[in-house]
Image (cartoon, rainbow, N blue to C red; front, side, top):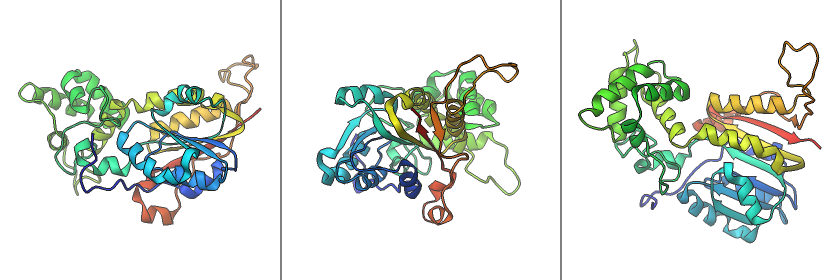
Length: 319
């Protein structure tokens, strides 16, 4: 899929200062940026690890890879870019002959470019096909496919579990009734349908009534929580001793997954709380670098409102 004519791939990297502080790139280090995007973070990592640091950049989105290749061209073969999901990092590293990493960064969620490219279907600001795939060239089902094929109960569960939409069942019921006549295929059709299904509060809605439904569909289309769990399951095996994992999340479900993983892997015991004695034999694999999630500073939020919901967590691999 070609980029929209006249549209530049512009994306402000979230919390760049904090990423460099916690990742601490060094000369000769090998780093993985699992969510390459427009390569803002990757460029900073390569600059900070000059002259010998290397970076492997992964992204599902071919448009992002094209832009990243332009941005990172001055670094030559210090930057190795691949079209891949970050959950597939072990296979990519094996193919490249890389055994261990000194740092991993993943910046979750959708990029500004993806939101602003209307034909990608991530936003309801303009009418466009309901796609929402991070890789629009894949054979995976689109958001429109899910709305057409899933049952009322399955749709309601998606809206509730992934979007925390309290009117999930009412919205799912409306979608199923509507598709008996005409399928819901565009962003405007879905946004209008959701708005019509929700009660109108006094003073109006704080956010657009379709926001949570769109978020939930995007997460489901791209299996974002499943891919994150796959990465968390293998991330610390990919790091060398002293290697650092930095995760930036924008959704409470993502942040909860990261927090629980970090807490478990930093603990010397994972027995159930009611066990009188420890029998698990669990040894800590990491040390927390962030006891609480780190939020963007106010000056960044003022210049980049997207950073308001970002939460950064970091941990270092123990021997």
